[in-house]
Image (cartoon, rainbow, N blue to C red; front, top):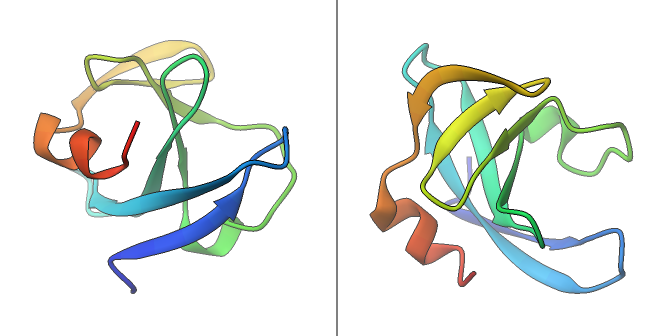
Length: 82
């Protein structure tokens, strides 16, 4: 998987995402949003489906609004350029 990917958000802004491996071994692309961070699997990267995984500004990850206990490291969040 590539280290980063280009993405156009719902406002048609181009942004860059960074690869992150979750504690359960799944790979996600993380990119900044107006509310925090969006997480998508490589297979769902270009999908327009509703996000299941999101993270707040501190990196706390949520699945459908419920906290997972995972935390994205600050060095990963900083690389998103957000």
